[in-house]
Length: 79
Image 1: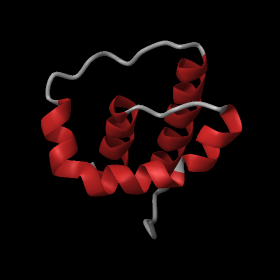
Image 2: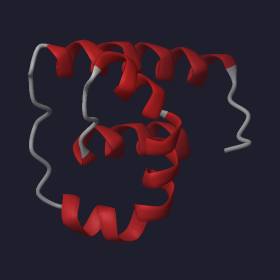
Image 3: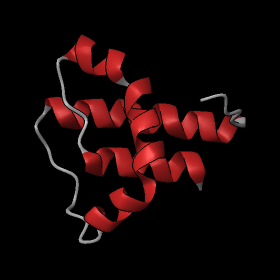
Image 4: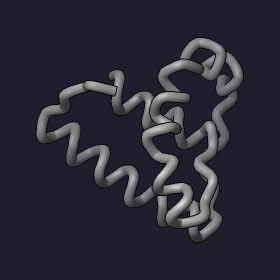
């Protein structure tokens, strides 16, 4: 994605992705987000880019990263 992150954002992403993988493996859900459909419409392109970056993780751990999880990552990356 050719984005440069400062050390704090790198740490936040590392921590969030680690917890996200554990949460998915334990089959724990993220709290439902009422506006997720509108959010996806507005942010589809960036969410797809993030999803592509995480495809190796999905394959390695045989998991599926949900749109709710992608939204949280999108918020971290772009806010």
